[in-house]
Each structure stands twice: as structure tokens, then as C-alpha cells.
Length: 197
Image: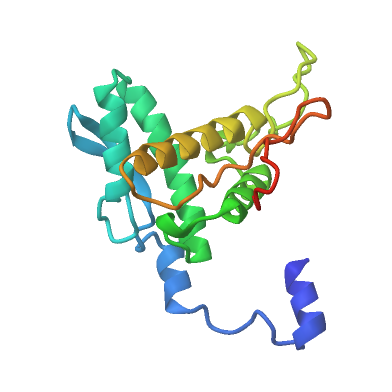
């Protein structure tokens, strides 16, 4: 379908050119993508590595702090995957972690709502499709994408990451997590008479 659309716009030979070497290397698994890696010490059991295999230090600082606060290694791993997703969005947008705004958080949420969750990929032939109904129980199977609870957890971890760094004077001036809308009966901030703010 996509190839047909490309041919309609660009002519009969669209999509039939030689695959660029980076694409071939990705297809053949020769390119290292950012990932979560088992850590070297108990104080950092998991860390995020960039595409060159280097540790993403701001993430490691945060994860070490969580481990000092009695987080389990499984929690550290979960947080590492949340921050890996966050940094992948930042790298795709070419935005440094210190320059983020709410716009990048919105991009993360939009991407997670539409991205396929690799944990939900069916690997066995004949496996039921994600989101289909179990004929025995009548319950729906988990859908292919990320669940709303996972998206909320990811935002909470990103919020905590920036709260940690802001405590030490690092990162953006504002946390990039979208705020809750004010309820109709809840008053807004109080501004003194004559105050410009």
C-alpha cells in the first residue's frame, strides 16, 4: 500500500532503488541501537547505553540514586526502559535532555500511544493476535501498543528524573511533564494587586 502510494506520487520506479547501506546494516543487525544493558555493580544493575554503546550518564546518576533509596534491581530495570524510550524520542527530535519542553513530553505520549510494544509481539506461528478476544474467557487480550498505565508510568519516571536533576541545578528550568488541567472549582494562583505576574 505504501509502495503503491509512493509510485503514484513519484513514478513507477519509486521504492525500487538500491537500499542505502545504513538500512542494510540495520536490517542485518550490524547497527547498535540505544538499549538497556546489565550494569557493572549492585549500585547500578542496569543502565542506558546510546547507539555508540556509551553509558548515558544523566540516566545512570538518577538510577544510582534510586538504588540508594532501596529500589529493587527490577525497578531500576523498569526505570531504565522508561528513560530509554524518553531518550530515543529526544534523540529522534535532536533535542538535548537539558533543553526539553512540554512539547517533547507530548511527543513521547503520542509516540507511545501508536508504537508497537515489543513485549506484545507474537513469535509463535498461530498465536492469537494482540487485542483479540480469548474464546474461552471472553476477555480481550492486551493490545499491540503500550497500555495507558505504562504511558503514565513512563511520564512519572521522566518527571522523577527531572526532579532529581533540578535538585542539583541540572536540566531545564521546568519539568517537561504536562500538568493536570485545573478543575472548574479550584482557584488559580493568587496574584497580589499591582503584581505584573
